[in-house]
Length: 317
Ligand code: NAD
Image (cartoon, rainbow, N blue to C red; front, top):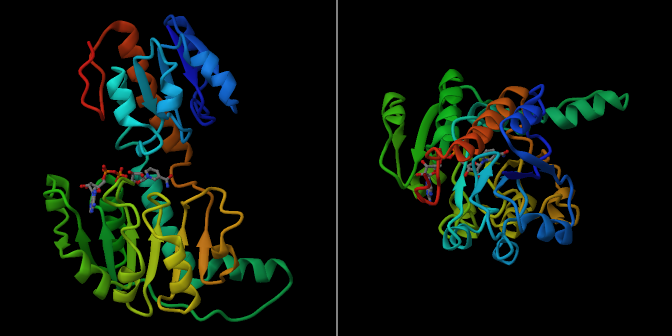
């Protein structure tokens, strides 16, 4: 069974994970990084692909003659053409519940960073400077969480620890875990109008693309701080730039961008924006759990067992 690995973090915190795969009969081909031509060649006789943020598009999948599994080393599957994979009988799996605490920690870190200008303060002191930064409190404020899945609920828990009044918005009915947290559900409009901090935790898809745009910014409080650790594209970056420049909102923390790295983005010139390079899931603990869950599906495929966490609802035995 030939398994292609394209994500650099797979197995980073496991000694001998690749060796164990080989012992189980896998021929492991690591392509990090890879050219399109290389991938086209390698995918022709591959059985499984452990993928990170790389694009699995229709044009590439047309060469996947015997691919049975694309195992996402993470949660968001927006880089995979699910329709094209399903049409070719390829199961797409992900690893839910493995990196939610890591991402929730970072979302909260970004909230604190923007509220207290921690990155700028750090930068000033290290350059020999000294000065004051006017911050705003996080403690006791209103937190609006959009998307109450694993990560959103993690942010809610952290918010409650900071004595925040938590509001939530989601299109799905509340899960048992959500009910246990007693989150006050409100409309998106009310959440945007009343929250001091707004944190995004929805997947990127046709319904969430640009769900935060000019109209939504016009509803937010002038002191609002917006955090996106979900996916670039959920916020319309042009509208964000205008909102931050005109101080329609106080600030923003972004781990994700429409294009990464966002080298040519106007946003990079703004002082009320704090950024990180898509590191939400990158803690030792989360990467370890994610690798274990991704490889489990490869072993299941080897053993002819039913795959877990299939997002395109294909039943492979
Ligand atoms: P999840 O599936 O547990 O939760 C997503 C929630 O969003 C669900 O409750 C769903 O009902 C809700 N939702 C979907 N569409 C919505 C809409 N239009 N409006 C409101 N709610 C909607 O997923 P999760 O584990 O919480 O992850 C959320 C997203 O975070 C992922 O899809 C991924 O894109 C992103 N993510 C980012 C990183 C990172 O490194 N920054 C890491 C992991 C995940």
